[in-house]
Length: 152
Image 1 (spheres, rainbow, N blue to C red):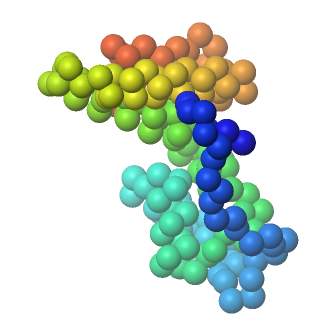
Image 2: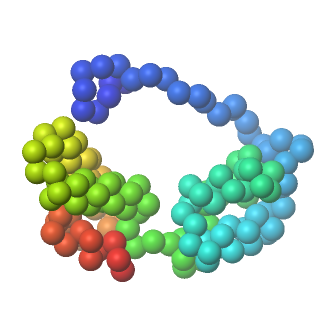
């Protein structure tokens, strides 16, 4: 598949081993894993950070194989989910940092182009999340009010 904003083909990355059940050496107690996930979420960790911590420190290679549910599903069911999906939130933070850079460096044309591409990705994700029902109807991304949006 091609890259989103260039005319090049993508470079393949690593692929997880195909497994149907957790390996025998891993921690597979679903209640204990869910408890650790909720503790890490209360500490302010994102779902990606939670997955890394569980893998590196607690010996859980794949939460979905061990519990049958993803980290984000476990967090949402506990009522601790974010109002804005995590990937969208990270893209908005990136766009805000670029806008701040552009106020200090208005002639940085490369950054201006990257900001356009990043905001294009934001609008594309917003459109998807609206159709999927993960964002409320009528929600839209406005660069002027994005900082207020993330502070909630």
